[in-house]
Image 1 (tube, rainbow, N blue to C red):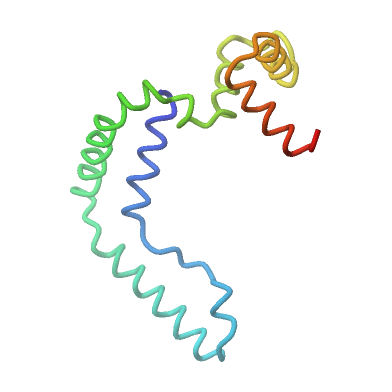
Image 2 (cartoon, rainbow, N blue to C red):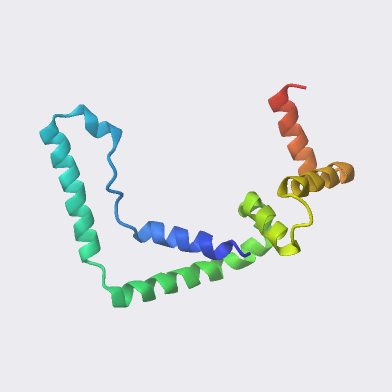
Length: 136
């Protein structure tokens, strides 16, 4: 569940963030005038989006939207966190919390060996993927 806040904040912000001003490859096909006109139109659109932001309400709306999403997703994440969470980050977080008694690589190796010896459902999935990928 430690990842839920970041996931929600990113999703809520993505819905609110202005267009990206970056150069798109499809623009390179026109003349300099056409390219410049398209870039300027994008910059003006972004300016208009940002100009309309009211700092006093933006933060309140952001927090309220995040809290509402959190209320919607928290129970779902409690049940399905292992599917929805970033597995690499979970491993790093657990490794930091237990205190490094070995290298991170050894920590991951121990987990994989335990999964193998216990024939966990997750290990069977990994084994199947590896079998197909390596054509054993």
